[in-house]
Structure formats: structure tokens, C-alpha cells
Length: 612
Image (cartoon, rainbow, N blue to C red; front, side):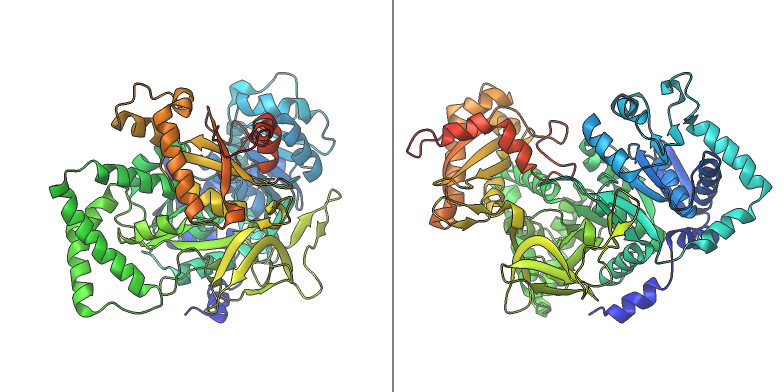
């Protein structure tokens, strides 16, 4: 078992700039970052960071300033972020789905002095805000054709880089002085929480936080040296911050950027990464895809796959408590893996991967067990932006489906009287940014952070998350209900893309169901239905019958107060762009409650259990 002292020794006093310098010196010719049709080696990446840092300084960026970045996943995003860190500034990536009013809040609250935008689409949302930011010194734009005329604050990215190149050539030692000046305790990034239940807050993390997390992940789940990784989640989220930026810097990895999640599977097949982290919805969709393929096979072709999966499921079960399978089982698994399971994993681009993770929301135990039967053991983590991502994790030799494991090395956990999870340790953040630029600590005098999540710990020490404290439903009869449990059970059916359980201060529980925009049409086509349109499928009697079976199946797993009595099927999908989901595909419950208020009221308008 990896210890806290081992992690501390591995993390040392490294900072992001000093690690980039190490990588340029020791791995300079190896690839670091691929995206937008280009690949930068570690030496080239550091040089680009030097140019950008000089350019940003010339544009007015100073130590301690805040930098907001609204750029898609492309190498310039990494370069701008790392450049700001070299100058001792605090970079923050904003979600691409923010409205102009949300942009106004973030820009005003952060008092950003420099903003980096991609092009016209970003300027459309940011334009109305820029004139009301007194601290703003420069707006850097990647697409020079989008820059409005007559505003001296705008700087084209290419001009910033060419000017920075000239400055760097004059004094290359300046980069070394910047690198040496950064300390492990300094802030490295700020993350605005996604705002599922309230106004976003600016979470400030230090180099110590992110390097400790990276060292822990590397020690707990080691992979190949200079591993291949794929970055596809928003860089505004802590998961991709760690896995797509800081962990690759720590391990001198090669990151391939996938800016469009619809291209994730082709990218995985091309890259063959050594590790992969998927939010639950990604794993669920992968599982549904494989299950669909298996279900369409003739029995004679499916039989050997089923047999191989049975062996893998047995091994998954045995290894859960650290045991090793008997020799005959291990031999059977090795044969089944090579002949059957690895080719299946190859269809997902995961045949080379040995490190798998999931987090950001609960993942159904059935999904974990399904992948276990394919030879994929997914480590489920739990944490917040405030805990630099994972505060707890399951381990390769100790896991239990439906739990989020045990504390990361060096982290402590306890439950308050109401079941709220509290943590402390080296991954707990510095604090929240205040409007005056100071950092407001969020821990108590002993260093404990109240996370807002509710959980239980079993006799073996495994933590199970039951719900968000602010999201608990209290029915009119006083029953406390965790909506995520019913929602997770409903989502296990391939027709259901999302489910939102309703019931606070109501006599019983209801749900809004959203069809899966990929699986539902495929399901309909396989059954010979005359339409694959989501709106028409939502009202189709065959689909309604199947959804009723899905609800009935979920209710069998739920206590009586938790059971869904009525539900309504919506005619259009939910996406981050449509507003019902965060960029990491979590429900925005307040938006859903407001937007579908009439549908919700109808569910309670008449007595009975008739579905809608």
C-alpha cells in the first residue's frame, strides 16, 4: 500500500515550471502535446511557454494577477496557462458554456487583468463585459480576424508570441529566473465550481496540491514511462486539470487533445492510451455500445465471449479484497483475455491501458461489474475541486463496486453527525478567492473541510456517497431521499440518457426522463420502429412500455419512499449547451426545476401512478 511519506518524497518541492524544465532537459525530444494538427516535444513546449510568458508580461501581466482563458482544447491553451504560472500569475479556464451574465460574474469577481479568448464565438459572449472591467489590461485573441478595430487592449496571439520570441532571445536566462522563483506553496490555478446548486466560487489550488495528487496517482496506478494519454474533458474541470495537465507534466507524458467528445472513440483507437479516466456517462455509453454489439451476435459467436466474461468476472470478484485467483482460474483468464477480451477492449481503444478511473458523479455498480467482465478494473474516485480532485479512491487490490474506496494516502476522513463527509490533508485547497483578491480559507481551525456530500463508511472502511447535502429530498412526510440512487438505477437502461428525480416537499417521488440521443434511435431501429426521432420516440407506445419496465426495475431496488410513482418523458436531449447539464454532465437541478416547472406540477396535479 502506498504511504503518505512515499507520496511526499515523490512530490518533493517540484512545481509545474520546474517539472517542465526537467522534462525539456531529460525528455526534450519526446512528444509532449498533440492537437490541432501539431505535435510539440517537451523542449518545444517549454520554448513556446517562454515566448508566451514574455509576451504576456509585455502585455501587462504581473505576479499575482488573474488570467481568464476561454479557449477550446488546443495546444495554445496549455501554453497560455503554463506561461501565466511561470510569471506567478493565477490562470483560470472558464467553461465554454457560460452565458454572458455568468461571464460577467467570473470576470468581475476575479478582477482579471488579462483575458485569453479563441475567436469570434468567445468575443460574442465576452464583448458586452469587457468595457466594465477596470483592472483589464489586455485581451489576447488567437484568431486575429476576430479582433475589433480601434481597441488597443486587444493583442493577436501570433503577435504576442513573435514579440515574446524576440524578448526571450535577448535574455533566455529570464525563463530560468522565473522558474526558480515559483515555490511549491504558490497558487497554480483557480477553478470556478460548476454551480450545480449555487453561485460558482473560485477554488484556489497550489503547486503542492496538484503535484501531490499527481505523485499519488502515479504511485497508486503506475503505467508505462512517458505514457500516452488523451485529454477530452473541459480544462475548467479539476479532473482534466490534473489528468490532462499536471499529471502529464509530472510523468513526462504525451497528451493527445480531443476537443470534440463525439470523436473520443476514434481518438482512443488511434492513440491507444496507457490510462483513461471517464466520467460515468462516458463509461455508461461505452458499456451500452459493447452490449449492443454483443446482443446482435448470433448465439454461436456470443457463447465464447460469454464464457470469457464469466472467467473475467470471477477474477474481478476475487481480486476485490486483494486476493489472487487460484492458478487454474488465472490461467483460464490469461487465455480468455488474449483470445477474446483484449480484442473487445481494442474496439474501445483501451487494449494498451492499465489505469482506469471514474469520478465526478456516481457510477452504477452494474457498469463497474460489466467492465470487470471485460478485464477492465475501474478505480472509482470521489472528491471536489476543493480537494484537488480525488480525496478517496478504490485501489487495484482493494475495491468494492458502489463505493468510492478509502482516503488517498495522507488524507483523513470523518463523518459529521448529519452524515456530511469532512476531510483534511495535503490535497485540501488553499481557499476561495475573495472579490478583493485575498484567499479566504474554508477549513476549520483543525484543517477539516466540510464537503457538502453525505456518505456512510462500512465496517471495512469503504466510503459510499449517498448524495449532496443540498440535493437531499425531504418529502412532505419527512422522508430523506437521495435522488442520485434512483437516477443511477434508471440510467442503467440504454434508453435513458438522463433522469432527474423530483420530490422535495412533495407527497411522493417523480422523475423527468430524457432519452439517450444515440442509444434510443439505435434501439428503435433494431426493433423495427418506423421512427428514430427523439420527440416521436418519447411518445411512442413501444418506448413507453419499455420505459415503464425500466422504472419498475429501478423501483424493485428502492425502498418504498424512494420509488418513482410517476414520470414524464421529455422530447429533447439535455446537454451542457442546452443548460440542464454542467460541462461534466452533472444535473443542474435548479435549472431543471425552473425550466420544467409546468411538467413537474402536472406530475403532482392528479392522483395515481399513471405515467406521462
